[in-house]
Structure formats: C-alpha cells, structure tokens
Image (cartoon, rainbow, N blue to C red; front, side, top):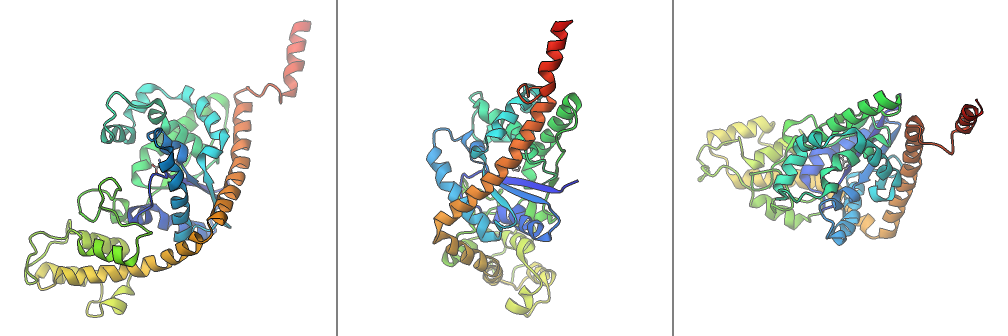
Length: 361
Ligand code: TRP
C-alpha cells in the first residue's frame, strides 16, 4: 500500500518554535527520508475561517506567512505538495457526505472542539462550521488517502474521529477510504513546548511565542526575559530544572555539538543541569547558551525565508502547482466515493440498462 502524508496548519498567524519542534522539524525529516509516495501539506484556510468569518483579511495575509515558514524550514516543493484548502472543492463535497455519518453528540464529545469552544468563549454561539470542522478535517485527510498525519498532540481527537468516519463509510459503502495514523514528535518536551513565560503552550494570543521569522535581536530579547526558577536569585543559590523554561527549551533544541562549540566546560546537558541544581550557575549564562543553540538552528531558516521573501510570485506559483496536484488526487477519491455511494448516475453505464429492463418486465 502507498504511504501518504497529509498534514496542515491554520493560517491564523506566523509559525513559532512550538510548531517547529512539535511537527515541522519532523515533517522535513519524513519528507527527506524517501519513505513516502506522496506528501501533502495543507494551508487550512477554510478551517481558519470557521471562527474568523468576520476577518478574511487576517487569513489571507497569513497564507503567505505560513507558506514562507514552510519553505524556510525546508519543506521542498519538489518533494511535497503545498496546497490551499479552500481551492480544493472535492473537500467540501466529501464533508457533506461524511456529515451523515457523524452524530451531533459525537461532535460535542470531541475534546479538542470542547476546549476550543471554551477558549473562544463561544458558549451557545458556536458557528455550525466551527462545530463541524472535525468532519471537514476528516475530508482533508481521506481525500488524499493519507496513511500518516504528522501533527501536534492536540490533533489526536481529530484523527480518531477521522478513523471512525473511515470505518463507518467503508462498512456501509465498501472499502474506499484509508484509516490514517497520527505521528507525534517522540520527544516529550517537544509535544507541548511552553511559551517564554513558562506557563502554557506557546500561542499568539498569550504573546509568549518565539517565531521562526523573528530576527536575532528579537530572539535575544525574548530569551533574556524568559521565565526560569523564581527562587534562583543569586548565582550561588541552588536552582530548579523542572518548570524552568530555559532548560525545557534546551531539552527540545540542544544537540551534542552545542557543548564543544559553545560551552566546552560541560560535556552534556545533564552536566549543566547538575551544576544548576547544585548552585553556582547563573541564569544569564544558560540563557546566552540557549541563544547560541537557537541561533544555530534558526539562521539557515531565516536565510531561506529571506530568499523566498524576495520573490513572492514564485511562492504563489509553488502553492498553485501543489494545489493543482492536490485537486487531481482529491477529485479521484471523490469519484470513487460517489461511485461507492451509488450517486454516480451519469457515469454508471449499467444504470440505464438495468432500470430499462425493470420497466420492460
Ligand atoms: N486542525 C489543524 C490545526 O489546528 C489544521 C488542519 C486542518 C489539519 N486540516 C488538517 C491538521 C488535516 C492535520 C490534518 O492546526
């Protein structure tokens, strides 16, 4: 069976380090592994509109931001199709048929939808489109017969709901759709990178994010003001590692060469942690180290971004090419699904004949 990747992001803002360690970095590795027959990375603008209907301009401007972020981290348009969700009509059509396979109660139980409804303060004013977006997300995934969805942990309920829809569809209409698996980052810290305030997940609304497109000066300021251990007041004081954002980020980003290159007095991260716990290691020193670690990772990303920023037309060409390829695949799946559902009246050559025979008798 073909191995196919489908994943995506809502274009509601620039992508940050949480997206990077949570999924983007892994997507690039998967892309370059050569293990996949086809890869689709979706800019999910229709989904973003389900709770931004009054602000289409925000979505429009962030499509290019997300595209630039994808290209800058190393998503390669020769290997992966980058596509825009709203330009794939088959997705809406598939969604409308899947809606018949899902109950209102099941959607109400979806933990991600529940949490988002609460976070947005929708109460009883949830837009229907927002409420049903897990169904359209199932269409996103199944239209490409994706086997693997590399994405963040918060998307787990979506993949589970997709699998249920696939099973139900196949059981009623025959084996057409493919059940996908989620692929999470294997590093625990990376699954939920906290914001620079150490409190919650990195997010734009909390203003605690470091963005892939931040310049060196911004990065430096954000790291220098990062939350550490509030009881670690003097350098000599013993410090805590748990909940210390700088160490959490080091867990997510540090590679073994970083020590010989930037901090040769220590052999590895555990040595640094031991010293911090014992006392005698200041926050400024660990922050400066983290800046170097992050700079090494982000410099090539910024360089690629600035090259693509100089030619926005070529980025739209990439999106158009990816979207065209995606339409061919999604249209084929839609045709197959409609044939299985017996709603392919004009393509079914046996239909007229069998009905004529019925009337002849
Ligand atoms: N729901 C995802 C998010 O919030 C975006 C998304 C839309 C997606 N369709 C998808 C993710 C399909 C994985 C697969 O970012």
